[in-house]
Each structure stands twice: as structure tokens, then as C-alpha cells.
Length: 98
Image (cartoon, rainbow, N blue to C red; front, side, top):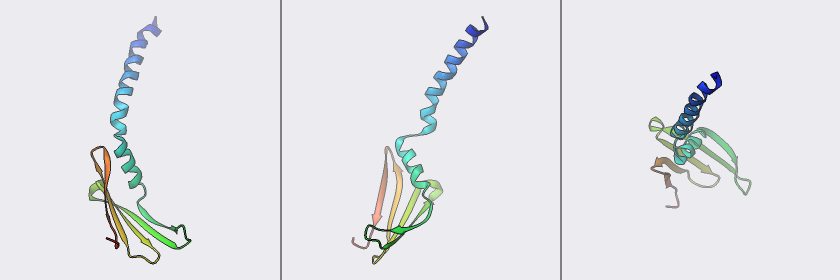
């Protein structure tokens, strides 16, 4: 008898969990933007030709934008700004090549 009393409670709990989980997780673009934010810091490596490359990611404006600065060997600095735009991620890229 006790088991049957708890079945509606468990069913309600599971139903609520499945309804709330997508809201908490956010949209795919918000999830992708969080991954961009997790790159915050300075990074160093080499490009495909073995030349030094440096990049940095900074989270700006209360977490609504990410700024990437890229310094490739033999080139002027490039800057890219990322932000969530409805169901996607918008970016504005500034580079010396115009």
C-alpha cells in the first residue's frame, strides 16, 4: 500500500524535472557562449607553420561579451568580440587586413 502512495509523487517529481531541466540549461547558443567564457585567460601556441601565436580571452560587460585578442607572428593584433544574439552568437572581427 505504501508503494502505491508514492508513485504519484515520483511521477510528479520526474515530470517536473524534465520540464525544468531545459530552462535551467539554457539555449544552445547560451551553452556555446559559456564555453567561450571558459576560455578566459592567456594562451600560447604555434600556428600550422610552427610560428609563435598568442591569444587572450577576456569576459566583459558583466558577462555579456567576450573579447579575443590574437597576436600571430609577423602580423598586427586582431580583435574579435563575441556576444549572444537570440539563437546564435554574434561576432565582430577587427583585423589589419580590413
